[in-house]
Image (tube, rainbow, N blue to C red; front, side, top):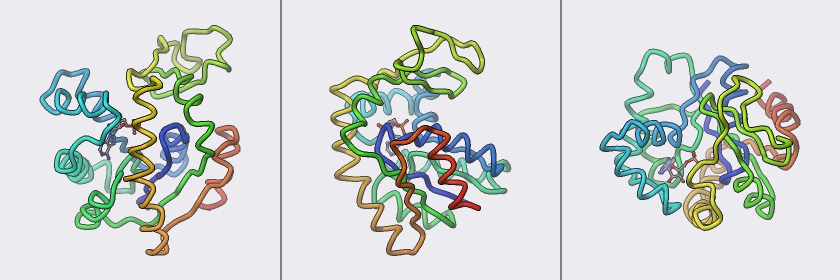
Length: 206
Ligand code: AMP
């Protein structure tokens, strides 16, 4: 099963993708995570990506598509995968069709008014867990692995505003794109807790 996870920044794609990947034994491919790893490693891709990520814009399609195309040829992708954060525009969606067969696009729908607070209050761990400050009671360590929590550089109000605009103009049209293909399933309880949202996803995936 090859799945796309669609949703605005802060909709909870990363959290749900990890849960889905674990339960259904799928590879979790997050283009955002790949870019962040490249930035940390100081690679050429990282240097290029950083300027776009800091501005809340999309990293150029040719770079992003080449990374995903290559990643999906690895042995661990052959039993199915979950794409988190890709495709993010129509060009990427059309490119994806040239090298992958997508079974389902899961769209996590969240009221836009909640997103700014969700993202700016987000604290993440290098293990992939993420939290909202309002649930941490001042704690600074990850409950799962004990790692130090930090705030993503692009989780600041100015960049988030640009990311939401990028989502609305470039990514949201993918909802109709996959609907027209009969591949869209929408999770309407995106405002709920991660477990509530996951419960709805399980009902869809079976
Ligand atoms: P994310 O972790 O999915 O929120 O992505 C963080 C940032 O990485 C985005 O705001 C973009 O700048 C960049 N990015 C992630 N995925 C893509 C993609 N499919 N195409 C272009 N840029 C991307």
